[in-house]
Length: 268
Image 1 (cartoon, rainbow, N blue to C red):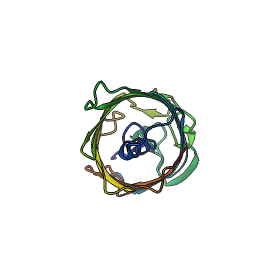
Image 2: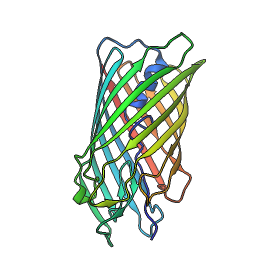
Image 3: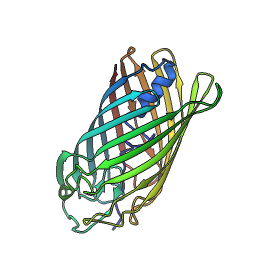
């Protein structure tokens, strides 16, 4: 039987809930204050058969807080999640071989896995040098694995982000690696690399648009690698409020048929 596959692009410089705050900061060119806070709420929806006979529907509502001072930053994301399906599709991982396979569609909801992130931004070596950022993520197993909301294990990742201005446009890239814990309920979990490449372009003082290509190695021995194109638009209402919307187009039958994400961010 085909293995369902889906990821929410919520970590790293994929559609990381905080990434677009970083991008819009770069686009408007404002100087960061000595102590900068940001609070974001998001809503993600995805539906598709993922290669199965029956559809899986995912609702994901993350709340993210970030704190920056100088070169250092900290982020914490805590989500609420609702999944309707056979229970073999996990957020940020994909389809897995479950020890006890469901045969009927069921609905599970609750707190998802939280993610704590430590960020260090290197000072550019020259005015024309790219910006370099190093991120360390720790996925905390706050989701209930018995409900099929997570693996019940801690995961870790490291990634490097680079961004460079070309006129008013910004090109950005990410290279990273995930280290996954072994789950007693989900077989075949494995470490994997990921990479992204994209751009963002300001249309005017408030609006900008962009896209990035997302590649990820298989998260398990039962899951194929993924390739997605992710376009997005961002609207900076004022100095404090930003709204971002995006979708994703997958290049395999294992991708969702419908994907949408909205995020509202407030910084002070």
